[in-house]
Image 1 (tube, protein in one colour):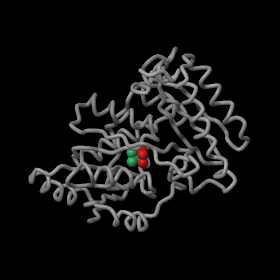
Image 2 (cartoon, rainbow, N blue to C red):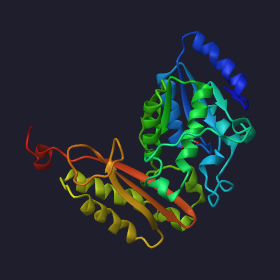
Image 3 (cartoon, rainbow, N blue to C red):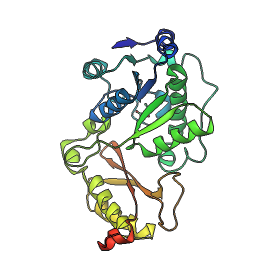
Image 4 (cartoon, protein in one colour):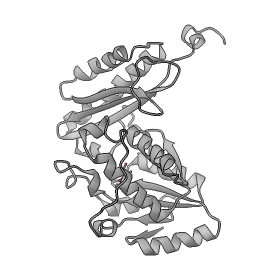
Length: 293
Ligand code: PAF
């Protein structure tokens, strides 16, 4: 595994692999790696000849009042964890390598980047789409791996790649959870022990929402209130947003039909903003009634 902090030598190394006809998979991260990231790495290694992991806490996706400085960083332990996996290159640039001059070009998806989390964090997805574009241009991967937990991010990157004709396959990897259901996130380490104990309420509430959708409920408001009631019963959880959207497009849904929907939740526990999601679909009538098809 080789570590690069600069773009030019990484590009030179990857060019040799490309010329040899090898495929390249990239796993973009902001570091502080956990088992969820390592699942992405495993998948990338299974599907590509070469694997690049990028580690970069991207300042442009943090708002002025957000937790950029508090975002956890530990490059030494990240490298130690990656050493057990078939990773060829780690790209961990300093900020001046990625943003060496004031930027004039940005990638901004509208309205997809302005809705949902984009409303809570104005400019966040412009920062994400721009840095992911830069990383894609640096690595020129065949495939890129993203977790389903950041569902809006995943949807935005899929749409960006389609709209801009980027020749990259976006691979979505299911959310990895603690045994009690809490979705893994680099932010979890910042939860107090009291908040950590109750943060599982998000997963339990989503379980309930999934059950209600699977049971055939067509009214989004009914599903959302079943989820909300569980979260609001937990006094330490400060619900910030809860939505039900079309799982492929994130369009609003008036009535749940045969297309899968996604439940998206964000909640604060103390200072820490957690997000979680669940894709849900109505079960077929025979599955609901237990009849044989
Ligand atoms: O999901 C993340 O860790 C970041 O948003 C990403 C995709 C690495 C861009 O900075």
